Image 1: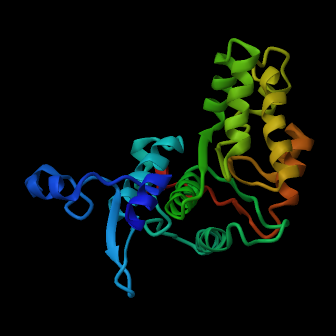
Image 2 (image 1 turned 135 degrees about the horizontal axis):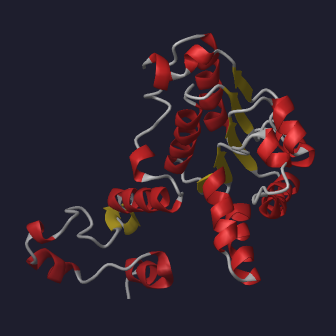
Length: 262
């Protein structure tokens, strides 16, 4: 048995009989390099054969990771490169977003969260998804969820074990993105009829776990830090403490592209 076959059979990859593969027409394969095996045979400098992951396998993994991230298909084309800042605060937000991506996994504990706060329509969701997409390309396990969808998922977990499963998938991601966190008015929040309150403990479990495990969280919110603190001091404190230098607040109503154009 050749060294190459030993490598392939050990779990690094499997390549079917090369002669049989060559007899098949190239048009029958989606990838002409690896013949859909996912592994490319190369010749090393010393003349020995070896195999390495094919580029098509990397693309498949990237596509799969994007699907698993929770980012809706309509938003998957939002990147930091196609975010167009219109003023200084948006330029700062974009610059800090790019820096966050650049140093993700290398930053100190004070800079692992990122918070985009304030004015609706300023591009907070675009930036958060741009961060997520950029890190997915770097093979970072990302989970994206809107606040409303997160609470709905908690509500739909009929059994305790189902709830734990939901909580764990957001605990375990390398980066968690929560879009529009606490999207409700303070009056609704403090009202006795508010149905959201029963699920806040579940969200706190996620954020508290990530806080102590030092796992990054990106949040967007239409409120200010002070308003967020008034809604839940414990959650806000954990987010803010590890977002030093990574908090951007949009205040100008004219930043709302939905009313004032692109």
